[in-house]
Length: 154
Image (tube, rainbow, N blue to C red):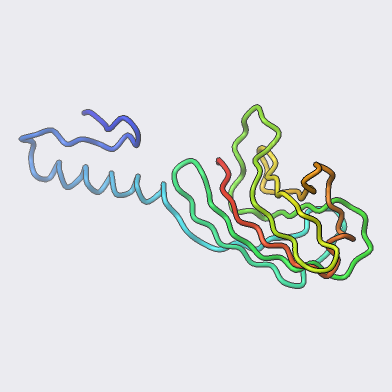
């Protein structure tokens, strides 16, 4: 039996019994189905402050070794100084020798900083850093909305 080099799909033997072709096609369809997936997820506060977001919804599309996410989170009114950490991402980020993966983040509202989302290696959480690299605190995001869109390896 031979397989394709990238997805390891079974190549039916030319001239083989037609039942063999059917089995191979079914097996290959199952492999393809596991590589591509879409769904929703619910972002949660992972900062340790125990906050409940006023609104939190996310969608994702998984493609083989990465996942594209989009989410909207509205922070509650808070004076908590803990660094923003949003958990509940749909898949654990790849465990590679890096510190994490940057993704696009758009905080909005009064006083919201220009920021970059950062998915931590081997976790389902992201942090929020100002473009200077300084972490954004929950109090800075108090009552504001965070939009996130990006892709990270899994």
